[in-house]
Image 1: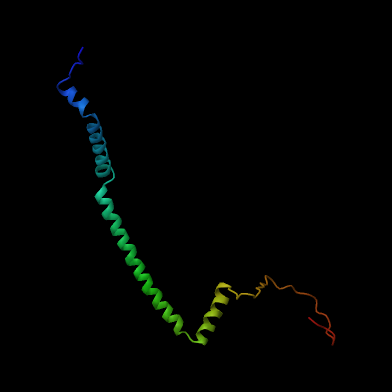
Image 2: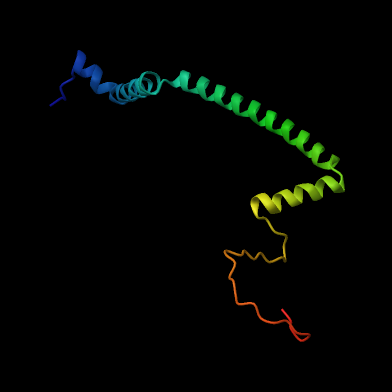
Length: 119
């Protein structure tokens, strides 16, 4: 017996099943990228945000160079003033120094002073 040869639409599907499966996958990917993920719009939006970040970085770099030139222009007297402000306002100390904070003053009875009195 000879195998029965199929004709028509079913024969077309049977012969091209891999091609049709790949076309279905292609349509699903195009639908997902273009309609659901807004593919070209997302790329343009990210490029704009990257450009804004680069411009912001350029502005910050120029501000840094201005601040560095100001710092280099300070004299020793100015640096001492800045150091004293940092110590007073922010409580900063140098490396190797110790910071003591007196919370309250304790009053004691006055004792008579003599030559041997020490602190």
